[in-house]
Image (cartoon, rainbow, N blue to C red; front, side):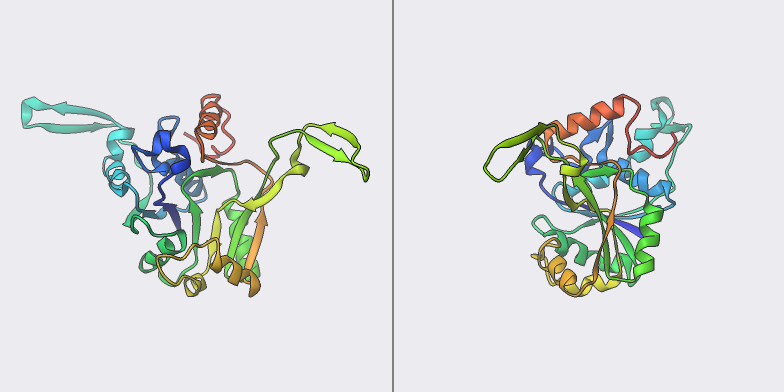
Length: 259
């Protein structure tokens, strides 16, 4: 199965970084968050990727074109015809197709545009701005067992403030810190899709998370795989800094692979 990654948005909520590059190319530990997502899939032997690019899509293409320069020691020998010598070349086992899915295309429209690259086979689908330690193998088994159109991974987002317990006459009976039981369950991406999903994607203006998801839910073709572990998106500069600190600590929860 191939992994499709949505990487075409403007990233307006983290404009401090995205004015120069697409949000999936913003670095965590000197490597794009897109790379971190792909490393998770690769750990589970998913090594074929389709990147749905759009905004500043050339940055993504150029980064992959020069990947060996980013990961190897290089000698530039100008004395012998501008020869480039690559030392200790470290390459991933990846096959990456970067598709320009349009500047203003919505999420469902972007998926619709890459159909020819995935054909009629099931595929993984996720967003290019969130990392997790979700078990892709277990997610896949869950999806295959129920046979529905789409499985999405759900995660719990904890409240950001203290929690109040209030009784019937508006008396505060307890004040406590938030915990996992106080969270809201959301779609964390890391989806598995059957080819039937394309029946729900009408045109470039289709927002995957709106009409298609509602129609699949109404048809009972949408399943939830709950992931209780780590998940974090990178919508803001503060969230980027949190991920950076985790990476620099050497204990990043999403790093399930070995160096």
